[in-house]
Image: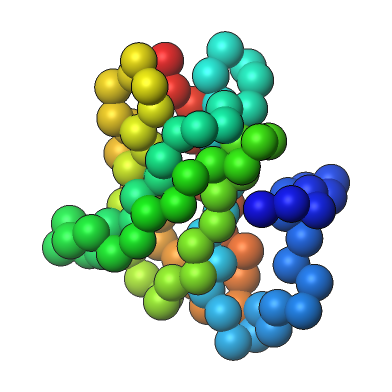
Length: 99
């Protein structure tokens, strides 16, 4: 994920009317955390996808609308699960802090 812009990674060329975007920033000690992994689990808890965070701690998934769990795995930290109800045609933002 490069080309970060204010407000997150650029969505140039993405037709948001047709997409459900779940994205955010993973941080630790008030700083973006690169090298973490973010998993997307569906409403039943099944693994759907995984991405590493960028150098600026950012992650992004293109998913279907509905209930999702974002699980963040970072070295030296306990996993963090956060729930989100994602809407189609919107940027659904979920920032995560690990300790």
